[in-house]
Amino acid sequence: MKPDVVFILENAGWPALLLDGSGAILRANPAAIRAFGPVLEGETPSLSAIWSAENGTTPEQFLALQELSPAGTVALKFLVKGGGTAVFSTAICPFSMEGGKFFVVQATLETTGAGDAKNQALAASFAQKQKLDCALQLARTVSLDFNNALTSILGHTSLLLGKAEPGHPWRASLLGVEKSAERAAEISNELAAFSRHEMDTPRAATGNLNVVANRCVDFFRNAPGAATTWKLQWERGLFAARFDEAKMQQALTKVLENAVEAAAGGGQITVQTRNLELTEPTQDRNAQLAAGIYVCVEIADNGRGIEPEVLPRIFEPFFTTKGKTHRGLGLALAYGIVSNHGGGVAVSGQPGAGTSVRIYLPAEKQLAGESAGVGGNLHGSETVLVVDDEALLLSMTETILTEFGYKTLTAGSGQKALALLARADPKVDLVITDLVMPGMSGRELVEHIRQLAPATRILCMSGYALVDKQTDMSYLRKPFTSVELLAKVKQVITANLGVDG
Image (cartoon, rainbow, N blue to C red):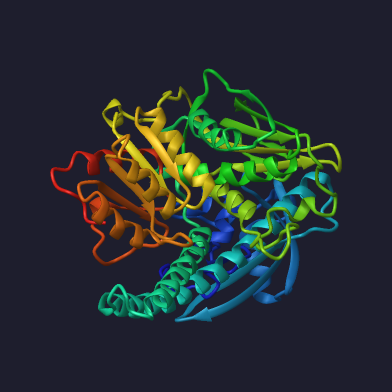
C-alpha cells in the first residue's frame, strides 16, 4: 500500500490516521491536522510526533501490543495544536494488505474525566470543529446539487426571455422566475462560500486590520436612524497580518450585525484593536493560541448579553435564536473564516451585562500600511450612481467610492435610479447596479438606461456568476474587496467604448 492510497476516512469530522507497521503516518485527514497541527504535514511524520510520554510506553511498543491483542478503544494522550496535551478516546484497527502491516487510528477528544479545565476547553473547541465539519460536508453537497438545478432553470428561462417580445404576456412571469432563481443562486453561493474550508492565509497579502474594521464600523455607524453610541480605540502601530480582505470584512460584519442588534435603542458598542506578543501557548475561552505575534480586534456591546445555555452553541452552523427566517450561518461563517486564517475567536458574556467577541489573527512584527495596498491610481472624481436594494451594501459601496474621491449617488430601486438619471444634473458617468432587485430588476434597469442615457457606462454586480452577454469588464461578482471595486470602476470609466451591461 502506498501513501497516496484512497483513505476512506479522509472527510471524517474526527481525527483519523493511517499508519504503517513502524508507526509512520501515511495519511492524516484534515480533522487530524486541525487537531494536532502542521507537524502531521511533514514529509515523514510519525505517531511519535504527537505521542505524549504520559502514555507510559512508546508508540512502537503500543502498536505491537495492539497487533497482538487489539483493545478496541483506549484513552491516550496526544500533543495538540497550540501546545499542551489532551486525552482522546482512541480506536485502533490493525490490518494486513499486500504483505504489509497497517493501522487505522481514530480519535475523539474526551469531554468527561479529562482531568482539568484546560482539557475541558480543548474538548469544547474540538467538538465545535467537529460540528462545523459536518455542516461543511452537508453544505458542499447541497450547494453543488442546488447549483446544477439552478443552472438548468436559469438557462431555460433566459432562452425564453430572449425570444419573448417586451410586451409578451408571459414576460413578467418569466422575469419573476429568473429573479427567484438568481436569489436562490445567491443563497447557494452563500452555502458554497461557507463550505470552502481551505486555508487562505498563505495566499493572502499583508494587510491592515484597522482599515477593514473601520470600514465595517462605518457601514453601521452611518446607517440612517442609527442611535447606537460608538467607542473606537484603534492601535496606532498595528502589526501587519495576512488575510483575505473580502472574507475578513464578511467575518467582522457578521459579528457587528449581532452587536448592533444587541445595542439597539441607544446602547454602546466598543471596537478596539491591539497587538499581542505571546511567549507561551495561551487560551482565551475556547480559542487556543500558540506562542507568537497576533493582532486582535475586540467588539463589545452593553446589550442583553448571552444566556449560559446559549453561549456554547453560538458558532454552531444553522443554530439561531432569531427565528425561522434566519439561516444561522452568520457566526459559524465568521468562526470558519478566522479559523481558516490560523486565528481564533473567543466570546464572553453574561445575561444583562453585554457581550464581547475577540478575533485573533497571526501577525508579523512590522507595522501595517495605512492604505492596505490601495494605490493612488484608484482615485477618481466622476459621478457614480449605485443601485442596490440591500442597504448595507449600498452604504458600503458609497463609503468606499466617496473615500476615493468619487461623487456618489445611491438608489434603493430601479425606479429611484431612473428618477435620478432623468434630472440630468448632476450628469452620471457610471451606473453600478445589482442584477437581482425586487420590482425592477437590474436587467430591466439597464434596458431603460440605454434608452434614456445611452452614453452612460454600466457596471453590473451580482452574487451569481452569469455567463451571457456580461463581459469580464462590465461585471463584478459579490463578494468583492474595496480594491476590486475601485479597480473595476476605474477600468469601466476609462474605457473608450460604452460597456455592455
